[in-house]
Image 1 (cartoon, one colour):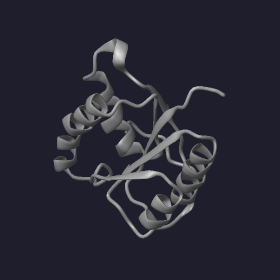
Image 2 (tube, rainbow, N blue to C red):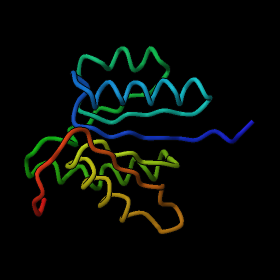
Image 3 (cartoon, rainbow, N blue to C red):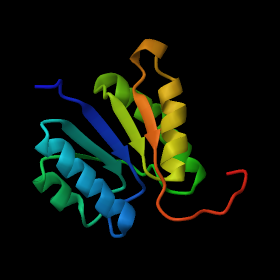
Length: 127
């Protein structure tokens, strides 16, 4: 059997939509394959379903478009130090920035792999 992976998915909230459904599907596939699936978001109506699948939910406002969200960077770094993961999968732009900066706060040998995906089309701009 292959070694178990620990994967943390990040998104603003688990309320509705394609990103949220995809998050549940990935979590289910990970758990079904014997891996550790974690999701960090502000919460939402899909949290009970996620937990029924066997994944862990961590409630943090990492997708709120406000300056206070920057405080989540050191908190995420601390979480990653205390509960290391192999892969961080950011599924939205703001959580991706928070994760990228948090991962940079970790020692280079302890940084998880970092993956991003996007859902739908976005206009091209500096952000």
